[in-house]
Length: 89
Image 1 (tube, rainbow, N blue to C red):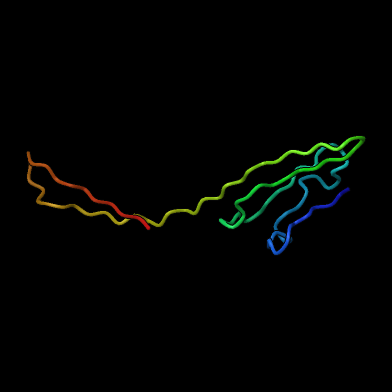
Image 2: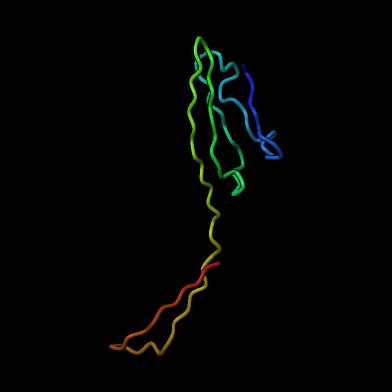
């Protein structure tokens, strides 16, 4: 029906669009721009020509980790062991 249902309060209105200008030409793919962690969820594509076909896709958006902080514990003496520690939020 040339229609995208954004869901309630999803904030997707300005970031979702059909890939092709005319989805009736057998490509109803959508593009989701500027992915955010809150976009994680189940998306459904419902195509209706003579019959209705429905397909669901689960999208998981993970947050990029912060730059790790690393340091050496112990003395760095040749022939001995050291411990390398790293931490990231």
